[in-house]
Image (cartoon, rainbow, N blue to C red):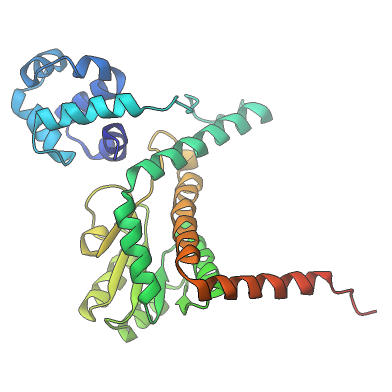
Length: 285
């Protein structure tokens, strides 16, 4: 996972000293590769211990590992597709469309880079072997949940997605170790989803979380943690971008499940054929 992606994902939750280090790293990554921890601390105006704690907060053992990750990220860096500046009321249609498209592309790239493939493989294995699948989210995330349930049902999987928090909680109370809960919450702190997680955990239900990067009330209880990105700089677009990132994750899971199951592919072909035939029928006069 890219060091830059990690920094962007947790930048909103950093201390003042850590924010200074994050900003400097993102703005001047080439400088970081040539600086010792003490030199970086002097340049940014923080203590050397802050540099070490910053590296550890990103998941590295120490500053040397962090610096190697920065160098690796620089070597793999793709051209920046983000158009700076939020969409404003004065933007024309073309400018608005370009900014929205650039934001979506950026979010998709960040979400892809934020997730390790081993986590997706574990999630696919859990879903493939689940007797029942409960998919929970509220607000915009509930739309993603419903979409995912439809996709899984086409593969012949027993998947339930209900927007009502009480129904989600009641359903979780009937699930057991043979079942899987997919919990979708951009913040990772949605009260309704936290309650469902706790109920599912009591019953030894396997849990897959889809949240923002880092430890939170939802992901900390999950057997598999997947992460989505909605850039903090685009608050007006946060809901749109969150759904864009979440949809990428569920689509990747759906396609991976389709690849892994011959029976699922047959059922998907059958459902697509039935719908296609219905569309071709002439209306009864």
